[in-house]
Figure 1: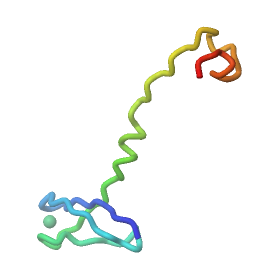
Figure 2 (figure 1 turned 90 degrees about the vertical axis):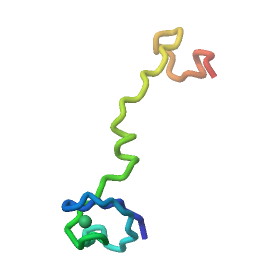
Figure 3 (figure 1 turned 180 degrees about the horizontal axis):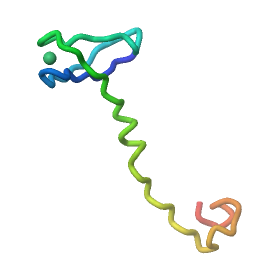
Figure 4 (figure 1 turned 180 degrees about the vertical axis):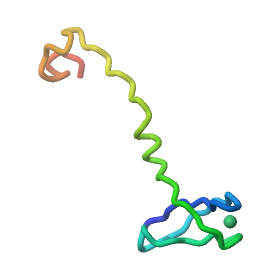
Length: 71
Ligand SMILES: [Zn+2]
């Protein structure tokens, strides 16, 4: 079962909960208020713009970096 991060919409308490059903509503342990599930951290990382790859000497004419002698 995966862990999910939740944040209370009332008191903004954040906590981690082990849930079997990801659609299951998890009440806030502090105030029993409604919570929203936070997106996994990997999502935020995935949104980060990746560094552009260095252009090989051939200007990407080679089918693989190895053919260009880069690796
Ligand atoms: Zn709360």
